[in-house]
Picture (cartoon, one colour):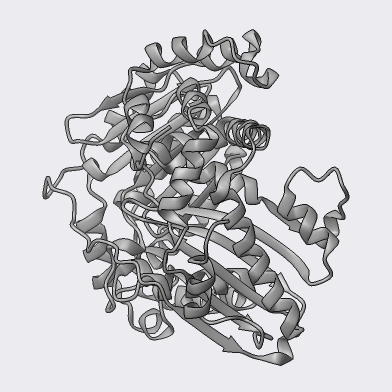
Length: 479
């Protein structure tokens, strides 16, 4: 199936597409043909969306549970920073919990604890999120707290100075997590000269210099109602949620109607190798430029990612390991672990493998070569059974991500920010099923074959090949 054929299929109305796929007489795995499975996908409560007069979007899915999760997904993150204020989004996330004009930090913490609720937040390169998990009857109180920390943060100078030390300690902790370090370097090298290269926590000099004026400027610029999705899942009625949103967020005003522009991503195939034999192991990442969230090739790359899979020595193994590459990793002596990844953004992505190898020079070279061989094998063409198994596994993972009010709320907020809508599970299932072995082969040829890779090495990296050598090996004939 050609790429244009796949795009035409994905453009069909979902109802027509599902009828076409489900009426097929071809023999496929039971998870696809089961009536109960199809009905379970179609009978899920819809995601209701309402936009308030000030532009704030309210989205919810009712689940018959006594608990609920409600949160704010904001179209703001490291991607909207510059060299001077890199780290401000994450800094602000810390400070909003340190008290508001209506509640001291102690009062805020006590109120949340007395409700038995859970209040949390996180910052990524393209999103900032604040959410609360609570009893369904306490959604009003939780929304009042979320509205207060969003609109009325105190941002006291003393709290700002204290948080500097907290963030600096967090940076030290992150530096001990070599996987985090590798992925930060991966972005820094792959997206040189663009905001996607920035570290989410920011550089030390910025953390020491960010002040109250910087934080207020960021809030005024990015915390606009039209850039916010209020998402909820659990025992929440949508009409009542809209009323509560008007009550708590209706007074927010938009100072500008257009989204803040950010420089587009610019991928650069390149390398970084920091050799330190004393670390004892070789940590590396090998990646190529992937696709954005909304690209029709997204699901094909996710299936390819699932085919490569992941493995570590603690799992053990044997002939029944479904992933051929995981079986090979188990049979060899050099891999400690590996993990495939497909990281997506608004206009780009990174598709690749993170691995940990024994320090021997020959072992590292063999490990990287094995990764490339697996990529070439999938590009030459994976078997129909193998592809179907990967599709079933991917469906299971995506369904598992929607288990519980917090997971559903997270899915609603993320998809509304990335897609502008919540994709129904039946449509996700249909889009995954549309990826045939020929489609997968075409997508792998487009994104992986003969593309400039990014290579990051840390530790005992003597055997890690350079970027030009890897490019040469990737461009070898696909016999």
